[in-house]
Image: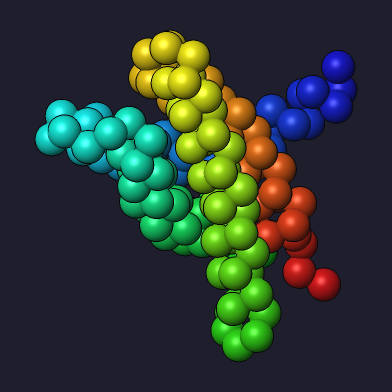
Length: 136
């Protein structure tokens, strides 16, 4: 119970959740807009997620992990590369779930909702533990 209370008091995950909501708005808005324009669900999902990645980097590096962002040089470049790798892992998961939903004749929007939850969990873990780990 005490560990749970400590986790709730950690504002990093709350800021990450808010950043994710902002990036998700970009992602879903793009996904739905592109589908409305006639683009197939799988590439629309990939494009939306990519735009969401850009929004998430800006929010994560400026409002979430502020004390753990490398200032410049090789360390900063490494964080950017790892952030992109974590995003690509989320993109692969998202695209795969949407494609699987479509292949199973499930509404791709339902697949996207499942992908949102799983991608959030994966990218939070990667970014908190790997990308923005505490600076020595």
